[in-house]
Length: 423
Ligand SMILES: *Cc1c(COP(=O)(O)O)cnc(C)c1O
Image (cartoon, rainbow, N blue to C red):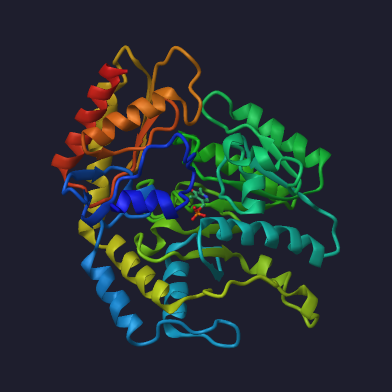
């Protein structure tokens, strides 16, 4: 049997209808922004493998750090024990996160980072003997696939089978340009009519919704409204964190600080699954008590995994190098030039850029669903051309590894231009 045949015999892939999906491509190796399949066909990874891989595939610097840690201390339980890599990650992150963040909680992936934040928001009020059980979230949000994260997510595709089984979530519109007032008023209305514990949001860019962008001032206003009403704010930076928006965190653009921040994806440079939720002291203090019942009874077996921590430390080091910061600036400059060029195209509705994130909406006759026919046509075209892009309906976005060369980036742009002509 070929690898592809064995794959279809044994494996169940994520977000895949196996009856209609094409056989997955077998990738044998990767380097920098490039991937090669088993037949040695080359692909440019223009979405950093689901946004996790800013420093490129098979990064030697991170690999060395991982190897060194694996042969020193690969894992130790984090209940009753601690270790230097975890402490160093905490120290390092608290240096670069918004100043009010004081405590670091480890878990394994973006969904669990969100799960922890939502549970903490709910238990925060439980511990204070205050009944607040509603979570506020944006329309079309994506926060992950575990139950609380799914409840907070607004893309029906991912959640429709579970309606009626969720914690209480109320949605407000995203404050995109021209709709800010609607969003503010909705938030005020929801807070007035419900017992709200927390407000979770993807700061400045809604990734899975198709890189929907909104302004920092609008987010600052929403956070202020929450603060005035003692509603905890949760910035889900799982996608936006570690340089994607042009600053280390999207919240660095925002004048108000959140109560909690969720991190994962680029945290370990796409090497080892790890996530972190960070908190203010005020949040932590609501759990700090002589009463054991007020503790946060949440943990995962791999919590604080030293190997993951070593990968995170190496990744943050790479992010802070001048070379990497220059890459981010270069990609942003190129995106803005390409945006200027492409937004005038008669088949383009709109294009937008923030940091290394670029998105273009293509005109289509029918309303395009998330996994609709235009999306399939575009996806297949890109793969044939050797470019990995996963359009969301009629939206094509680029989120390149920061190490993508200018030549590779120009090829991605040219392929998108060709695709727009084709559809
Ligand atoms: C990807 C993502 C998640 C979920 O992360 P997983 O590691 O896939 O569980 C949560 N929030 C945002 C904003 C994301 O982009």
